[in-house]
Length: 230
Image (cartoon, rainbow, N blue to C red; front, side, top):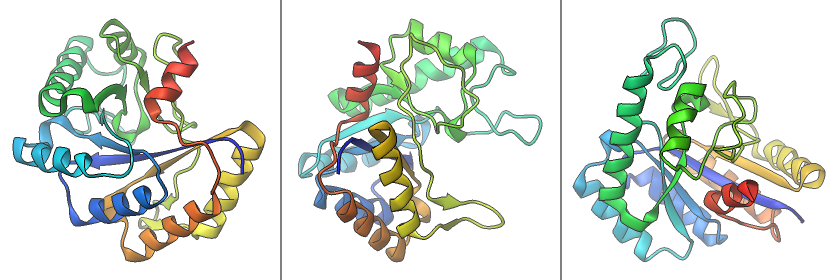
């Protein structure tokens, strides 16, 4: 199969059993492990465990900034942490504080691709990201986040979860077909995972999906962002 394929993990706080299970699936197929870490929730001890796990991983491992506190500042049904309805100074303070935490906790593992909670970021946030030299931003392709050439987008084309009325994974065979079609059409696909709702059955489904994608290119999110900036 041709094309480039990226997998993103959100809501990383520590090396939980479910994260470890998905990590093992990804490295079995040499898929880069992208850890979307919530800065305020990652303790020194958690960062130490994640760094130690990365050192013995067979896959390339990097850390992305997943918001700051991952709290909702929305006043309606739209959830967001960094949208234009929020004060620009507050956003700047949170974004830069989160970056400082992850740089201190992870060093070179931190790659400055920003992953906004709920896949939503406004122009005020993008301005801060650009000014601070972030490498890119990763959101689901249907996100309302504006396009900004200064902050290249690393899109996720597939979310395998049906969220309502309760969060369940759609059949993995169908998700594989969806990703394969995107790879054939566009030469690129991105899969957004939420490891803490992935049980053993979901891990097995992901494993079969990756078997079906054998032969695809497996760049890191940073490499995708850098290529889109060129």
